[in-house]
Length: 90
Image (cartoon, rainbow, N blue to C red; front, side, top):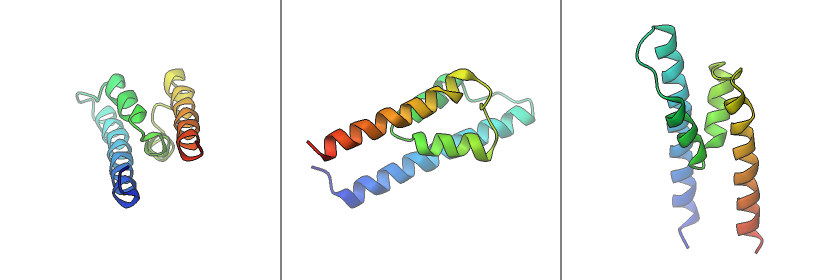
């Protein structure tokens, strides 16, 4: 079993990375430069960093009108929470 402190730091780093990725993509979109792919944004979100993705979507107002992000990222958060609950209480 991993050390809880190291696990918390790893999850915080993943969430910070995903948050920054959403911010970088928004900046690139405004400057008409090559963008971060939607696949990369969703994959990053799926790697246990949905809180960072949701925060990035809200703070940067980015990808909020796209259904796969608007519904997909919150769905991932619910799935991750359910898995975390299951792991913690079984």
